[in-house]
Image (tube, rainbow over all chains, first blue to last red):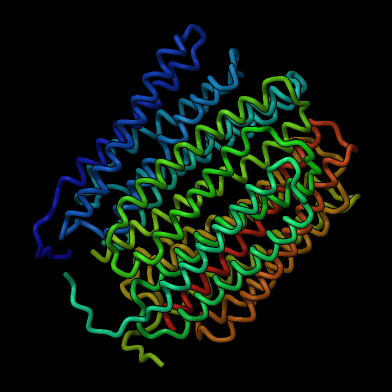
Length: 205
Length: 205
Length: 205
């Protein structure tokens, strides 16, 4: 083990946990939005608030980084982890925005599978963040996120095949494709978060 | 403050400023191209020359990096900043190329808003580059670039909604979407430049 | 020259060479798949096996990194190089998958040019990996990869123009565009590999 000769700044762990918990809320809003009798306007409003909370938390981490003399791990890694968490939020928010922008009243059923994978990935990420403190027991987290990303990929490809099955006209395909691609990007972004955590663990171990 | 015990190599600041000034020229060519009575062929030619100048400058920075023993900040950051500036140029050049390739004689009016944001971002970036020397007064720059990127995002989404308003057939939507996406990528790339500058300032402060 | 006071771990060079050789196999499967009388099902099966081999090699590098105390160059660079090689494989695999998923029985002839550039890039990358050991004679490799990427770009744009020439309906354009974009992403990913090698050489020189 490595001795730490400098006082630790524990606030980062809490800030990362806050950011990840915010992603759990956002992913549940996505699940709600997909359901048939959803009050879309109200959910879109909540999503926007969620995205703003996320932005504030990202900036709080950046400000803290500016003021800290000692950081628990490399400054660049803190920076990258905060950015990756922010990317997840941006994609989930963009998907909700596109659904409204394109006035997509009916969505293919398979989208629920995509969104449930995102919810699970958000929960796993939120559970893992506090373990950054010890850098222990993280292997299971990134293996599971990688498995979920593979699953998300399969769901995404199945949805793509469905879009081109002949049921939809070209313009509708274009619109729906944008939405499911944004959700796939969110799944990828969860993997980038996990990769960043893995690379921190590799460096600090 | 940090004492510098090594001689500084100031040529980097000039090379970054040159690259950014080249982006100002490119963004003004884009504004010109959008205007109704534009001589598209002549502008496309100028854009190509601009892109080649950009490439030469990027390579000059890389060569300098190979030959330098001491650099004003981390080698990787110099490398990343040069790459990000190059990415902006690539997207602006690609947008011009696509307009020609797809023979898009008429463009939606809203594109002018997108392009004017790029011009403003280029100007701000060019003004900020010389301040890398002192790493002072950069906060205003990256806050403003982030604000511009948000504005670009709104313009982009408004243009997307317009594309699907029923005015265009599916193939035209596909073509125009490629162009406005490339311009949106350029706006994002300006934000990556600003993020790199921010992360250099965070590390060196 | 820099003295090395620590024992070198040569296994990394072999693992990177293995990964790159696997990309040569994958690129040749792509060439085979494009030919008119191809047994697509058999090739898709082989591609899947190839992608799994790639994944195993990537994970072997990551595991080795976890266990190594001394690495031949920066841990993060080893991590990034392994990830970039993996990205190439993912894009080539995704292209094959989309061709099957969209049931694209006929592909535009120009795709063979795209795929042959990928094959050449894979071969060059595989030849360059063993030279990471000495970090010598790598300049020619990354100049050539950059040239190939420019060529790939021109082929890609020519294919795009062809897609919109009026020969295809909107849904077919959408499908074919996804395939050629994935192949273009693979060409870009080869350039990212070369850029990573270049940045390792810059740092270690």
